[in-house]
Length: 350
Image (tube, rainbow, N blue to C red; front, side):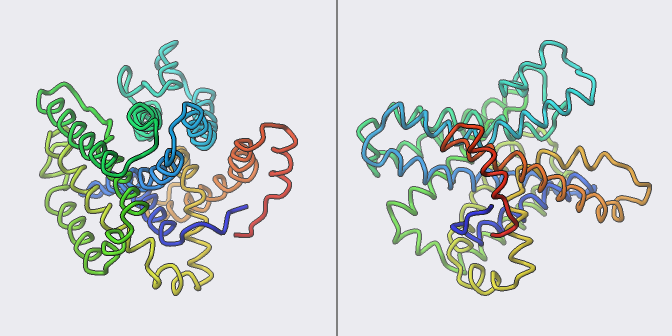
């Protein structure tokens, strides 16, 4: 069952992001649409978990607060990830032997690469960010988050991680993909929303939204083309990612609060169910889509998409109903009874 507290505008953004990834992995576009889709994921993730963290640390920071944060995030992300990873190990040969353990510890990007489970690279970024953010917040803000200090903390870390990534790539030390600076942009937006609502409301302006969209398009078409920029070029891997993320960040206030999106468009039943359920199933779709895309129906890429997408959505929905949703319910009460009750009460209602 899906909660009614969902923001429809953010569901639309999440749907766009996953479809950018799907299309980029299905068709040979000259522009890195998939990168843009993942950067949207990062901004939304930082924005949403940032709000949770700021609220949790509002008055006082305790290690129990961090543990609770980890428990809720890891119940959401780890079971589904390990399920797909075990599936791949069962049906495909293990290319790394005992070193495959790094995939269970989210260290694959550092030691063996992500070729065995390509989409896991973004999960590596996310999971280590979940460790970094609450621990660093606990260290500096045990007595609760003070807005001016937390703002400096975020800006300082954004600058630090950007510089480290740039220098690492500039010195040709390989591809460093820990885009904490991009995720922190989402946390910065969360702080503005919760502690500087007047500024957040001003960012909720059609002109800002339009300029941000123009920025995304121009950065993509002029600077994000694969025929112009080497994939491992310092500018592309660091600066381009960051600039795209900044533009995405400035679209969020309008999308989240727009009456046109959240009321008028939401009234269209088909669109409402498509965007909401795609958003709900995004994680499963992201982890599973390359496995489904392996299927060859001999119809050409365009026609196969009309077969593979319904299959992908169906599998993702079934897994959500019998596995993801019941597992997430265990965050509140870890028991077989809780799992079975959630499974039995699952419905199509939104």
